[in-house]
Image (cartoon, rainbow, N blue to C red):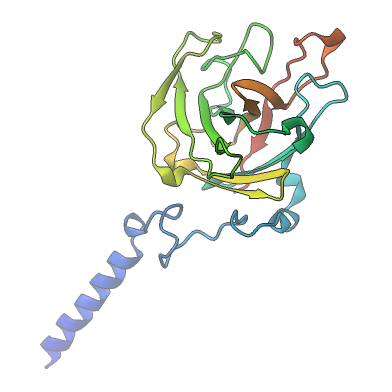
Length: 246
C-alpha cells in the first residue's frame, strides 16, 4: 500500500512540475483560453479607449499633428508597449479621407533595435540622407467599398543598403495572429502587435515607430511629422521613441 501511494505521489509531483515548467506555458499572445493567459492592459475589441486612461500616463508615447502639416489626415498617435505587445491608437480627420479609394493602406515603420547602424528608408522619417527603419508593416483598414476590415499587415525587413532610400523590402512569413485592430467611430483606429511574432529582435529598452495612412498609395497622414518649411516636404522628423513598460 505504501509503495502504491509513493508511486501516486510521484506521478502527481511530476504532473505538477510539467504543468508549471516555463517551457510548457502556452503562448500568451496567441492562446487566450489558456490558464497562463496574458492579461492585456489594453483590449482592442471593446469599442472604447478607456483602457488607456488606466495606464501610467508617463509610459505612453504620443505625437500630434504640427500646425503646418504636409500630410494632414493623422492628428494624434499614442503608443504603449510592454514585454508582450505593442499597442497603438491613431486619431485621424475623416474630412481628410472623405472617400475611400481602392487602396486605403496603413504603414507602420519601426526602428526595432533603436540603432542607426541598421535599416534604411529615409523617404518619410529621419534626416534627408539617413534612415534607420528595420521593419515595415503594410495593410488596409477599409475595403474598396469603405467597409472596415481587420488590419492584417504584411511584414517586411529592410533589404537595401544601410541608411538607403527607396522601396527595398523583403517580405517575411508571419502569423495572422500578429495583429488585431478595431475602428472606433469614424476617426480612431486602435490596434496591437504581438512582439514575439515579429521577425526581428527588439532592443530590450525601447524602439522607434512611425505611422502613415495612404489613399491610392499616396500619403495623406503621417506622424510624427515636423512642420513643413515654406511648403516643401523636407520637414521630416524622427520616429516616436517608445520605452518598454516592464
